[in-house]
Amino acid sequence: MAFREKLAWISVVTMSLVYGWYFWTTLPLARAGTGGALHYAKLLQGTIITVVILQIVLTVAAAAFSPREASAPEDEREKLITLRGTRIAYFVLVTGALCVSVSGIFFNTNSLLLGNYALMAVVVGNLAKDFTQIVHYRLGA
Amino acid sequence: MRDVSAIANNIRRLRFDRGEMTQAELAAKVGVTRQTINAIEQNKYAPSLETAFKIAEALGVAIGEVFSYQ
Image (tube, rainbow over all chains, first blue to last red; front, side, top):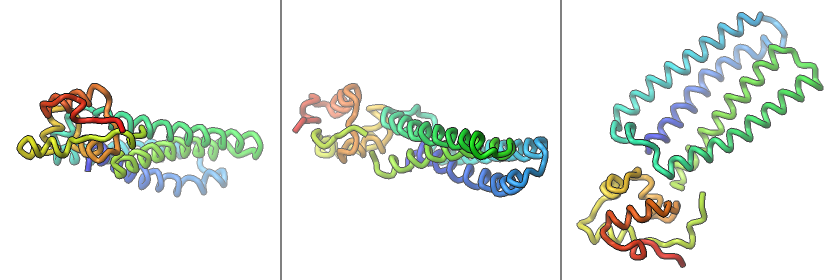
């Protein structure tokens, strides 16, 4: 498995698990309109720190197993795969942003829920980027 | 990805003609990953002109001997 495919898997697993837990915990509260902004800020802070620490630890571990690949710059095919993933992520993010806008304007959604929906759009966009990269690495294209 | 169906290559044969050079060895000479050499060899990825020239140079042949347009 290519080193950069491993990085995409690390990103998918850590973000799915940690942000999955975050949304599982916060969305029911946000829907009910309970919990102040400070409560969400603390949860989000913990979530971001956890994701960053997990990704650093797992990336260092992956680099230890293939140090030469880890220190090499992206080659042209890998850059193309990254761009392909970024393009898909852009469409997912724009769609998510539109959904958040519609939810806020037409359905009078509360601000706590809107904030979390916007964050969800960012997370799903990132997951779409990682999945696209994994698919291209798997296909060998 | 680019449509590579019209571009054929002889990398695999040329590698074996040169003392069974591995994909990893060729990749190191060209400056790409082994997976990229594998993708080019299997006709799943069309390299840039620069990489195509580097592959030909690493194999010690002219670019026309490595790649052909069908």
